[in-house]
Image (cartoon, rainbow, N blue to C red; front, top):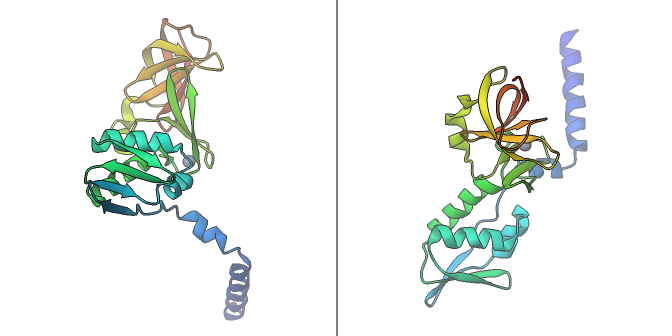
Length: 208
Ligand SMILES: [Zn+2]
């Protein structure tokens, strides 16, 4: 009878859940440590800067450079802290760190932070170690969503090969997309049929 089976099933499910490692859940939610910002005299200090870059797995100097640019202030690292000249609003610091995470850390496909930045020619690409997606950095998610139709699989476009990647494939650009086209030379003008689009990276073949 059905009720008996249901009961057994629930029991099994319950037992299975208990056996799951607890780290699985906490691992799923990615959290950047909240910036611990203090005004000290005429300076503003991020006291846990070291923890933040550790969690993001990015170079401290890279995040610092970004913050200085975005906040329009001077500052430097002192141990695991960052000291800005002048007073900076706490909310502003938190907001810029969030922007940095969106731009340089999170995968735009699966939203996971397990990514690394690799260089291909002059282009910086964010590669996701979880789902394998890649996208050029400096392309924000909102922009990507809005211009997602600039390139569609199955369509053919006239393109200029601007660069050649590490593996010898030609690289063209269209809007926010970069397109890999094997067997093309830098500087050539080609017709490209798009075979696959992954994030804001597309792969095409030369058709003429
Ligand atoms: Zn991903």
